[in-house]
Length: 149
Image (tube, rainbow, N blue to C red; front, side, top):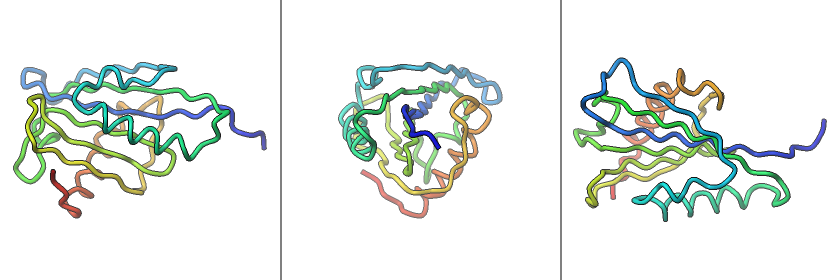
């Protein structure tokens, strides 16, 4: 078997907008060669810390790509955890671990950070049909851990 030359990190960004129909979210996919951390103003430190941890696990000679999925939805239940509604959710689907953060547009102190080795099967090219199952698994893990900041 040939050695792996490229590594692709899948980033799932979910945004709540109440005027978007809950059944018909707006979904876009962007492939990038450079880190998308410049567009993450509120959680840039968290993202950079997670990516440095993930990059340390791979060979430095490998080429890194990023697939960034942006999902804008009006489904309030997707953004609600234990009665708290968040405006944004960011998931980094790494090689072995899924990292997540739930946060607000306003610089409030309430956010949920976490990670876990959860069994999530996904395909980076057709995540638009699978993100609901991934979010269900992550929210189940958050409810068990109950880590709030």
